[in-house]
Length: 95
Image 1 (spheres, rainbow, N blue to C red):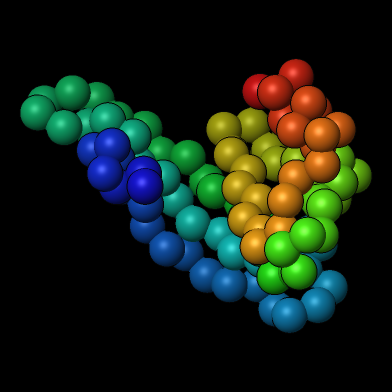
Image 2 (image 1 turned 180 degrees about the vertical axis):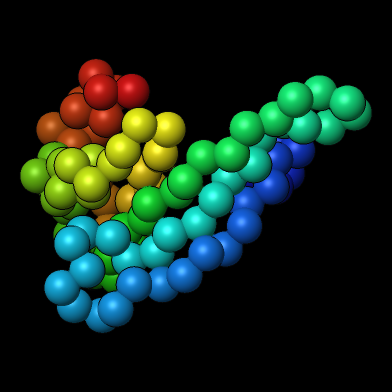
């Protein structure tokens, strides 16, 4: 999806299976920089959860990833479940 918007995602690495501190993958997102324009790169810290489709991801689960972010990083949470209403509200509020 990001590549289609003219940006470039560079795969980094997968973290170990357990004890990963709330991150399953790390990558880099390169924004801009096309046609002589200056660009920037952001670290992408991601969590992936394969759960039953009717499982709700809570705000607390997402907060664990957010707590690991540093300035200039973005977080990604990918799931086969759904986000609870409180998780969605918190994401919007926290931008």
